[in-house]
Image (cartoon, rainbow, N blue to C red; front, side, top):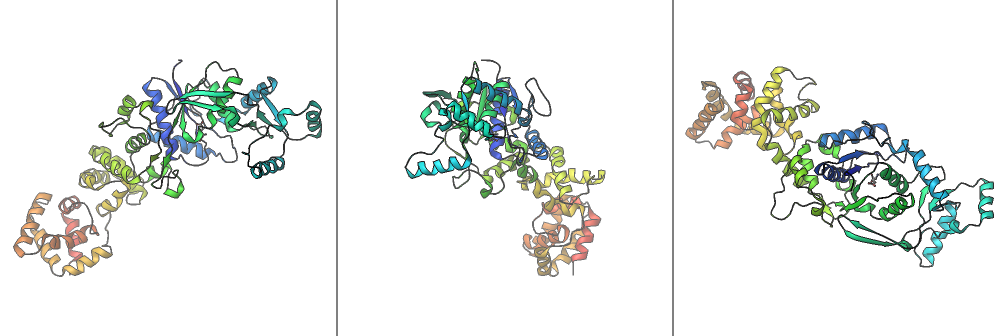
Length: 480
Ligand code: GLU
């Protein structure tokens, strides 16, 4: 077979759904593993729904995931253009060729005609579907409709027989053509339908492997028929990957919360966690094999043989736990760099942090690493280092409950000679134990005073990070 060429063909009518991202990943992995090429094609066949910002958004998200493409609308390539809306003349030309060869015909049925016959078929207990009426139209009838200026769509004339193909996931598949109606390929306004556009583009872009969701399985025999009718020597290999479902086993949709990759990016998920998790949705490396992968490890491990047939359940909690693991594995400077934009978007830092703020962040990240499942949890934990936070409700209550304990703690802190976490810990523990105060009761009001919250990074590290002056000033202010 020729060099492997795969593609992802998103319809840019919104932000990239995790299901499309998973399909993109499988195609990317498949191509990368085989030294092939991965093509991005934008399927904006419905221009009313496609917007430039969506195209840009889809590209951003793919880039963020690290799924780089070799040919696409931005890069160009030998088989462009890569936006379907710029290829309509090619789709029409293909339809004309099919018409000329007698493999397609014009259909003059109106929407009302079709609806009426659909109802009739249902009432008579027949499967509704196009009944082929215009295929058998006499020449004079056809000429009459043309003279009338009746709008006509173009339909493919499905031949007798069956289409068989070997699916990379499902194995051998056979579809009787009696199951396929004469499907439309061109609308009466001259715009192509998906079935034609995708087949023509896959053919012209020399796509060798079409990996896509099970929801498109029914399109495959039709597209194979189109390929053959268009004289393609070779038909791509198809692989239909399982759908992604929610906990209720229904296809993943808005009903299950936000399902766009953008949402995950903007809520502090790491691309490496996303890629690792998406890879496991419908693919398994095998029993007893680790499920923790870097992108490069996935390239080496991924194979269509490991793709399962049953739907894959998307579990946000599992993804979040994996995200926490990947966060813990980051080096400090890397973690600081990734947390920074979240501090900015939460308003904790201004757009362009100062050197001092950056240094503070670099010193602070080790103290929160273990407590982060998502990067967007960092601002709440670190805010006290950059702002003079006033205690929230729970923190205020803890301070009020503490009575004179806070004043005693202040005296202990003032006497600590070297302002370092270890020395602070020793002094405070020693005081609490000697005074017979439960450590938790002794430390909680101090934490509340300096961080403004009851949940914060470890107390002694927090005190050290904040520095003697600032920390003492906050405790003094809170102490009765
Ligand atoms: N544009 C289609 C979609 O977004 C993909 C079609 C295909 O992969 O053939 O679902």
